[in-house]
Amino acid sequence: MQKNRLIITDVGSTTTKAVLLQKIDNVLSFISFESSPTTVEAPLNDVKIGIFNSLKKMEINQNISLLHSVSTKDKIIFNDDVSYITTSSAGGGLQILVIGLSMAVSVKLAQKVSLGVGGVLLDTIALDDGKSLVEKLLVINNSHPDIILFCGGIDGGGVLGIYRLIEILKIANPSPKFKGEKVPLVYAGNSDALEFIQKSIPKEKYDVYIVENIMPSLKSERLEPAKLMLHDLFMCNVMEQAPGYSLLKKLVISNIIPTPASVLNIIEILSKTNKYLISFDIGGATTDVFSGIDKKCFRSLNANSGMSYSIGNILKDLNYEIDIKPYVNIDYQNDNNFYEYLQNYIGNKILYPNIFIGWNRRTRR
Image 1 (cartoon, rainbow, N blue to C red):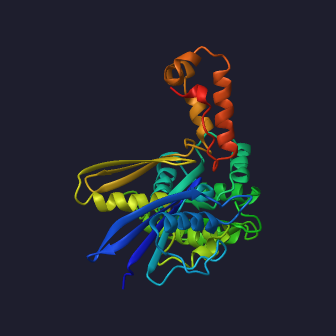
Image 2: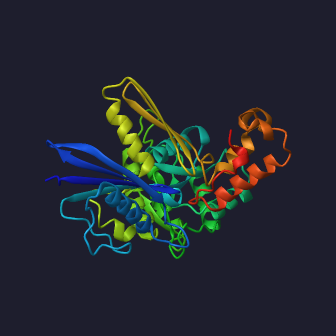
């Protein structure tokens, strides 16, 4: 039975948001919204602290009780009338490295799977990607993925290309985001290569998971098994290792899912009654675009454009004279030191993404 109150949080890369819904006349109604800096990274290293701070703000501002009297930042305990669910993209969210036979077919499908489950694409490797062997090895060694998604070929097709990619994986020395663990590798390619996959991929480097081929034939796609595996690994590996999430998982009434996956679920629901939809999610590290067209839903991602961690990329792509200068206080438009000040301001935001640094009075209009 649904409880009287429902708290929903989203643990973003820089900000943790909390929403309170309360049952009024048997319908959940919006009551309150609060936010606090996310605390998944050093020096706090515990995602629960940011959630606790948001909830305490809500209690004070609404003059209500949501947490048990003995609840602390280390041990959150909700009152009996409160249910709790959350999404998360903190620490970069679910980061995936895609490996496939060809950029045009297998990698494109693997990207579709990764984006559909709310993942961030770190990079792609294919036989025809134009990268040298050394460049491919550097990608694998330096990307620090949560998961590697490896696919390619139709069932019953040739396997030579898959063997060549396996040789690269054997030479590479990948390291996961969280130290002390092997990198999960999901194989969703030609079933004729399964035996070779299981025997040849080094068990000391990779935890190998086998799912159905995402392209069993030239005329068919089967994306759901790979999506389900990626989500399960996100829950069991990423969430289990990230600071504070293992305890957070015990508080929720439903699985923690990546924030982009939850937005995509919303688009899918809305697309049942709306022919065309578009939604933009500008986060601290990435910018996502979601669309619904004739009940088909899509997600695209710019992993280098965000408003804190990646804001330096935005500054790099802007033209100061055209995009910034016209909006600066006219008294300082010709101040040669202003652009340097702006660069330092944005640099500080990258280094300290959870801290709001107020503008100097000279930048105000």
